[in-house]
Image (tube, rainbow, N blue to C red):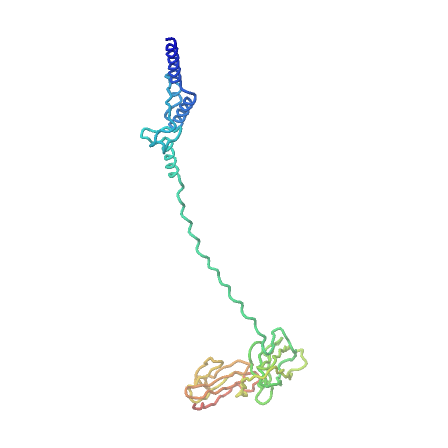
Amino acid sequence: MLILAGVLLLRGRGERTIAAGAATPAPAMRATAASAVAAAAAANPAVTASETSTSSEPVTPIAELPTPGPRGAADASVGVPRSADGTRAADGAAATAASRAGSERPRPTRAAAAPPPVEVARAEPAPPPREPSDSGASASRVDRTYATRRSVRFTSSPDQARLVVDGRPVGIADDWDNRGGGRAFEFDRPGAHEVRMELPGYRTLQLRIDVSPDADKDNISIDEELERIQRVGYEKLPGVYDRTTGAVEFVVEPPEATVSEGGKALGAASSFGAASPLLLRGPQVHDLLLSAPGRKPKPIRILVSGNAGRDRAVVREKLKAE
């Protein structure tokens, strides 16, 4: 009997100990409940601090199992409460933040139009350098200097050398040798004059003629021989047809033949008759050309100078049929 009473006494004490342990929550369970409350307050601002701090009723913590079950274990998040519809508050806050971030995303700006291409002017190629002429002429070069009071005679060789006085062609050396049909070349004004003697295949000769009343002679002879540098052909001009101080009369068959000079038509031969002669300037030899359809052209060289000795030159020609 004594043994049976001792066993019953020990069993009663064990049941009271188990009941007391169930009534008092373990420290780990209390900490878990406190964490859940704090997380709920942070996730739901609607719950104010006064509501949690002024409540006089004690809050009985709810024990949570480590795993909420097979269905909830997949999306369980420790310490994050669920809303009434079963979604986590953190998920809703994340969705709201994502939506707000999407609304505040900067709008893409339109790309600025590319500026139109700038056209670069092409540089023009530099002109090829001038090759020195066969004559070797230079405007700044003076080979000889002469002085006269009035005129000069060109007794130079070759006699076909072309003469250019102050930039104006005046004929050939043979026209102004004062022999045969030629005359001496008279300058129309005093001062320094530039004379160029040139011919294809020969070195050009640059002369300076000083016309002054203080010169020793009234008329001088320029007897120069041009230096040949190569053998080339050139057109040989005929002698002077006639000479005049300026007026030229034409008696030509056919009368409608054209009078031209340097490729420029001056008019019909019949328009330059005795009453209206062609007037030419000098001192110069003019190379004229008579031409008509079906006829051979005829070159006519007229010397015009104040010392020509005639006031009028008369051209009498009948053009031959071709």
